[in-house]
Image 1 (cartoon, one colour):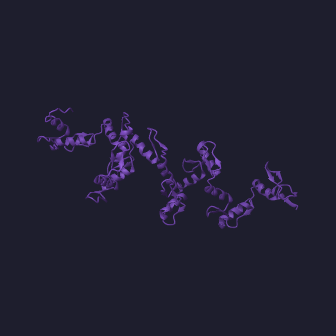
Image 2: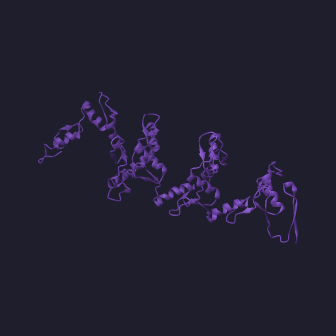
Image 3: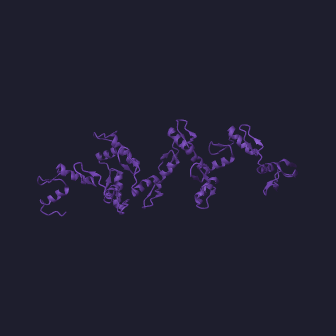
Length: 423
């Protein structure tokens, strides 16, 4: 059957009448307004030419927005009606646009058709690939109007702008908390529901966040992507690298507000603060001792039971505390991660480094309360204090003589021995 398509003069084209014998047949003709080839139908001409004329003849009856073609207004109307005609065949989700369904379906099929030609990474959406490409080019086209920051992806700028406006559009239905990002709300909601949808395929541990699962997987794979730039050490987590770097720089950002002490890690500050409060809520079930932290109680309990669960893989030594095993392992590895910034001497532990640093700085923090003398080591102060108190804690087992320090006792003991002791 013949069909007549009348192209109207009102859209900027000469009036024509075209007869098409076969409806399936698609005739293309060059636009009179540009070089594009378009199908020779009234609908195609109207849609194409509104791009040139900028006419938007179709208006939304709900909000008054205008659109250049019918398909645009149909999609827009669904934002008012809530209609979602495109249903996922894998799950219960539905979408207002077919293109959104296609993107979603790739989360099930794992299809990633968009590939980076620099690093061969693949992506499920072209927009994600475009954003990724900027990590290679360094391009950051989205600039914050209130500060110097710029972003590779527009959505990152949108989120950043909320730090200026204070806008937190994602509100929890269970409590009063609100969030900048929907993903933060989703994660937070799981604290109410207890939902942990991300499961480890190796040990079956479950996690509330996918990012936590990814970090956990490194325990199994042994991956250590965070490399120290000053030594050969590498770490599973970025936070561990940050803490480690302070052994090189000597930085101690966590300061006690009750005394002058500072710490390289927040956990050390927390434990220290308990020495000020005097609160010791952790009680030993075997004796009357109590502790300010669970760590202190656990360490004490192992000392009571003699339990030493942390065993060295190179020798027969075992330890009740994991940290002590780590220090011991350095004897085998020869690792000395604590380096002096003045003379480059290295140490297996941080405490010997601190003592060594005083030979450079001349610091003598241990002051005698009886005279003006000061010492770089606490042990030296204790020994000096005996010159004031007259205390002599080291007694000879052969006679009644006593000494203020161990060294003098050893010298004395040689007077009782048949064979001389060489010191």
